Image 1 (cartoon, rainbow, N blue to C red):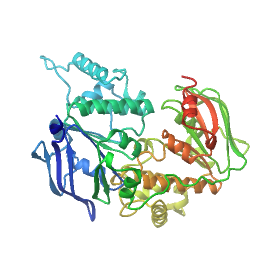
Image 2: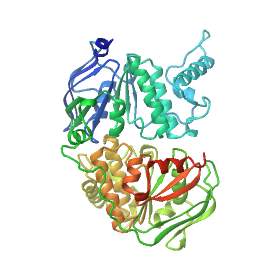
Image 3: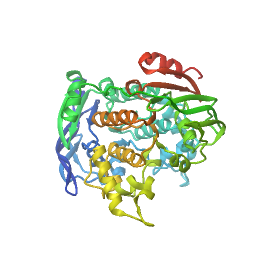
Image 4: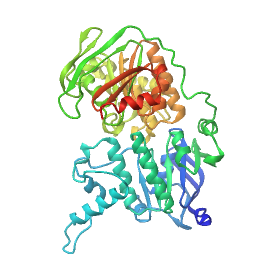
Length: 502
């Protein structure tokens, strides 16, 4: 049995990939054992997702060979890879949101009966059996758009499993999952590993890599710089391999000095589900105020209501003593509010635009010369934000879709910084960002607070919310269940408050 587990199921030899003059993968050699979990780590732009897309047939490699079960393969596209036993769950979900869970599960492979008609009964039975086996409770007939991001992510993982794959690639699968859902996912992964299925686990969450992975490989600047058993390495060695230097602390010192109350939320209720119930709190000038809670607790809904994109039923928002009950995002932006959304591809980026378009789109009036937009002004502003955010790209005219997820997030930050906001709300701002870039984002947030900007940040990562904020408001089922001083609280208290109204 041990010998079988040591079999090499997947072998990549000499893989190279370039985009124009930019070499993204440089002669990669990687082996994945049968019935194992291989962690794949690296900074944003290191080449992780590109390597997996070359494996999956989404991109065609420039050089190299791929061996699956000892046979050389070269897939023409994702469908070819799926039919040959390789599935991938992408970080950014691509689902038909208007269709049901069952439709999304069988998209492109609907079973038909003897009459040549789609067999809906078989679809529902197979879907029901699959979710039951995975320990998931899902309404099979509801449209995907009614589900939370975490529920949709679990459905996508179930879909990958349904292909009876030999290898499943998971790209940041826990980025939007609650702690119980992460535990459920890890149990699912362990079960699959015991069945001889291999998993490649791409993540920036190092604690999870040590918890679930047997081995870990690190990419840096397109080169494979380390492959080790997780038992034979540690956090500091991983960080050093990823960023090429040692990071003494995961968080910079939170040394901002909050002043007087500048934002006051009073008795806020929302009109439509999921409802907010009588939410009241104050935030001070120059403060980093965290919002914690389980997925679905109302954190995102609270920020959307303040920003004017969700309908209030009652309640008031005051900024510097003035009533600010915004009816839309434009009003909020005109009064110095900014918001980074959780799903950057759905509502944070224009994927068919370049960096210049995405950086300047929220501030177009500033770049006018007379009545016309000035392209030199726009390019100059974009170049400045690329430098400030240390975005990995060839230049301002790069298409935003060609950047890694973390670098796309940096562009979103740059877009809002161009407006010089006074109240900056951030929903999972470091989702899908590597440890080195996270540290840079943390420094940026703290420096903004020092300059007098007020920050409200939502995070599902407990270490992050405890390592970055001055105070934390905890949401539970649409209620604000408590506000705590970060230096005086702990994980147990946050979890207890997050369960208060369940």
